[in-house]
Image (cartoon, rainbow, N blue to C red):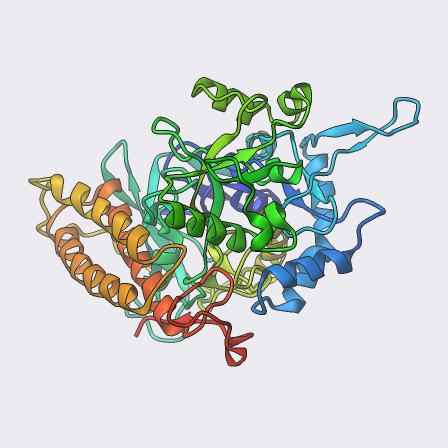
Length: 532
């Protein structure tokens, strides 16, 4: 058994920030299922929303967040995160993060932060590193982690299940005491023990057939927490990013919302602008509205995609502001300085998750959750662009502070080793591949941008049958990362469907043709699911 003072599951901005804060106070294990740089953070292009200019105010940022959240945000949480954001940004810069700057007009070479603007924001407040912000944040945090001898990183280790005193049959209040982890290269399951375990595992984009997320985003943290007895909330609110590059060889490549922030215009494949009839902000409307408008246009015309046109901007500006997007499009034969970019919506961000407070505390003592895996109440029914990295920074800091204030239990229970029983190596891996594909296609067709009650009921029946098959496979055969991910996306898919059926209205990202309007009775009402 490997014992640590703190265990972090995930190596994105939330997990690394937390680890750096607690490392001076004890030994930290960071467990990540691929290499340490592979995280949702690493793929974030746009940036971090924070009030850093004189033209902006906390009240404006709070107002924009509440408006995007469609009546479901917790205002106290929004205010806390927005107010504390600038201080956390300053700490990130001290660690070595370099945000893009620009020369101040009519000055002697002085520079200031180059703030971007994205959908739903009333002011320029997006700090960015050109269009590879997440990659630069990940690099800065990993460099800081490498300088901390108290932190040990376990790459290619897959967390299987949380260990609680209740599962161990111990008397007294339930608390989290460890986690079973598959060492993928060795093919063995190890036991990690700690009094403080942080879930920073990201979201669940791979539950859907088309997503902007990397392959790791399989909802592992939500699934593990739910199986352990923690409540999850608002899983019906899956944000679809309006603009994923439409190309057969461009896997999951996001065209940042910052392209629209700099003047990009959405058009039909015939070159006609169409957003004016959907929202006063047109192409800069909140993401849920833009995604539904594109979906409606595609269904109306039968087109497979729409166009994002920013050719009216100078070519040098586009190459300087969006070097990664420019180069990627060019590799696929698209010159964004000369022609529109073909785009299509794709699953992007999980606004719900493990129910926590703003300090990352779940309903199980010893278990914390921060970042996309958590539901704090910041995002409500629809995340405001670039608020997610802000939330991760602020809540990781607060969770670290809360963990250090806790009173550790007097004794740790003895945790038994993982038992494989009579499980054997799987005889046919085609079962895993088939069920994986069926779940993702089912979710895309029946539980996508626009939903109906009938489609949701069909999805519920199908997913129940699939979960039965997968559970039987799980008990009969030795575990592998593919099987574990399949088990997790099946459970998360069921949670999304159950949550969508439980909300009889359209609000934010949950748009149901059978209930096309918001119900005032459901404002400020979370959809909370707990394992019976």
